[in-house]
Image 1 (cartoon, rainbow, N blue to C red):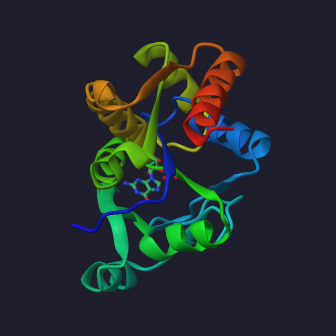
Image 2: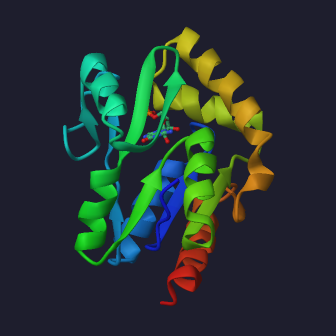
Length: 191
Ligand code: 5GP
């Protein structure tokens, strides 16, 4: 397995825990960070841009990239939907003398952590409760009843892995969660 000496930061959580808000806050506050754009085979949502939110690629292209060993990690996060982090994406960010920030699922986070060990900071954003998580997902309005249930089942499963991560941040109040995450990142990067 390749050994990486550069640093990276991973933010992970069950879907709807507030991971995206915390990620945006950190990217805003800490200019040394750069968002690692993942590849996915899911369709773009109406507000999403190719190359900014994700690299939207076909399943065929995704499998080709797996064959070519282009991913640092990849997962079928939801039934039939693939997500992965390109090695070249991390390199692009390191070449800019910045630290990649990955917003990836729990399994992917564990895989990357294994490859980077102490060069990697893993933040796990925990929702205050599963009930609250359900409310947040419903109010987001992007999920069908079926995909809401799929995401909730997955969330309960993912919560059972929280002890694997460097820091658990409970997102009861978003402001506090953001500040906790910021201080952990600053400490890790020596800022
Ligand atoms: P969404 O479809 O809502 O954008 O993302 C679904 C899930 O996929 C989120 O938990 C997100 O963090 C995760 N995800 C996004 N990119 C990657 C990736 O490159 N690898 C893995 N393992 N998960 C990812």
